[in-house]
Image (cartoon, rainbow, N blue to C red; front, top):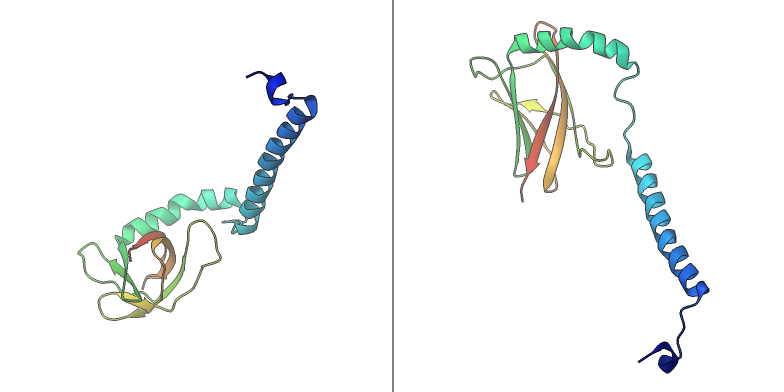
Length: 156
């Protein structure tokens, strides 16, 4: 069967329509993705990265001297945050602040109030399945600031 038999001939406007349609889809998807990326970006981590880099080694040495180990888990609507010292004993801090959220956007970020139960800190919090980040700041009894991002895997 030839083109003459079907009555169809590919013309220039067919090709142009195909190209415009294909590139239109590509441009539209790129614009949507770029808009989502900009809209969900949480912002700056630090105002002056040079100053932060100059203080980094000192802060790291102070935190390492504490010898703390952090572990987080979630069970039955409760987030548990265990802070232990070099000997494996629970640590009670003078102040604890944490933000629990997704790594990809800030829409689900919450700041639960953790309470010490004698062995670990816990807070009631309903979380969906997947990976969560706990960005915590704790103040040791000697005044040392301890900052860490703890990854929490929630399975349902």
